[in-house]
Length: 305
Image 1: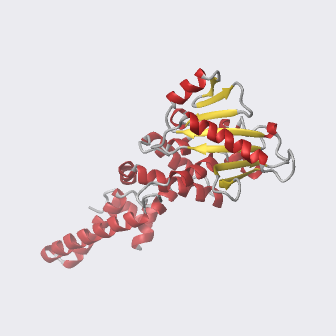
Image 2: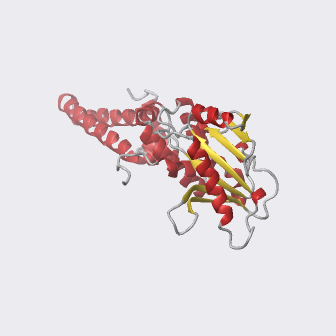
Image 3: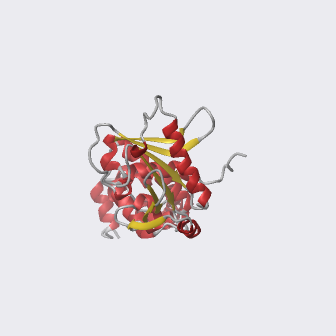
């Protein structure tokens, strides 16, 4: 059965967020989403391959456990993470090793497994402990699982990750935190490579859809980053056009009573003020209206009243 057209597609955003998390090491990593293990429909959510030339540990703490070949399983906010999911992912890593082109081409000590979920998987952890495995929180939200396992394994609880280091994963939530969103938007403005911009766009598409009201509030009350402005440009244009029409109606009405020229000024001023309220900067308003930047600033400072 196919996914409902209204269902939020979390996985592409997770792949993008992972790329942003590991952006400092991306030159030596290869990320392969929905990697096909064979001709059969068995796919790994994300496979991260470290280049042969890469030396040393990945900078981001999520990557500290990673080796050359790294199998990633991601659970959407609405999905559970069970003991079967745990062993299925271990099984994917085993299958990936077994599908090398030659015998032992992919060695056991070159593999790692990571599972990601938004909330703490209490039942899974209890079951793992009952089975004799040990669980240690190596970093906030990052749990290493040891004891009779073929590869290093970590379970990442994105809601518990440090805010300052992992905004892009934390906002992949149906209940994103405003502080995380605003900080991510601020950080996004500083990323300008095509790969980073594409990843930012993918993360925001999902996060905005899952937290629409929050982003609308941020859009109206603060200066938006370029990525969010581009993503919400249709809504901005709709609001601006609506403001223009309303202001022009009021301006024309005022013009009939006080003179057409004065009415046009009133209408124009209301348009500029409303555009500012929608989160547009003076520079953007000047560009869209054709007004001089200094005139726009004068109006917004109230000097023209």
